[in-house]
Length: 190
Image (cartoon, rainbow, N blue to C red):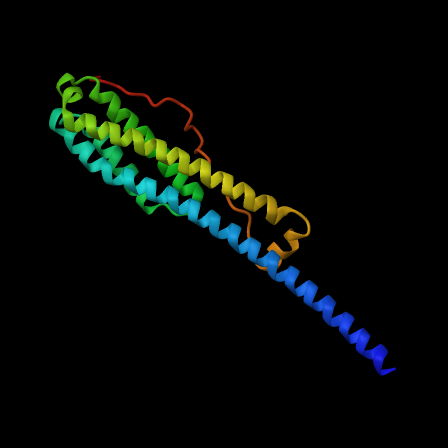
């Protein structure tokens, strides 16, 4: 009888160890994917900050040539403030869309000033801004890829039980705000 009891206890311990290691493995997988999502979102923030750091230099360069274009400078300042204060993926996407629209208008205004278009500082800043915009686009794409991987795992069975048990929510995608696909209207001298 003692031998049968020891075998039963051994089987129970083995089952508990297997279930426990599976449990720990699944939890660790969710933590890793969640951290990947957070890191990717942080990369978007880094690139948005890089762009925000370039903007004052670009604005000051354009101001020297186009001092009467005050409306666009105000729009850029407001968009920059909104981007700095944005929290959450959707707020950042909307603030980014407003900033992109304002910058497009600023660069379009530059077309009216031949001396500005030839200015080395302006050209260098414009190139730097274009490179930064490419980095932002890549960071968004990378974030959405990582978010999709996390969501696929967290929503599949049986991982969805672990995800709910430990409070892992679905990662939001970085989407353009409504109207972001519309070309901004630029008005000159009306």
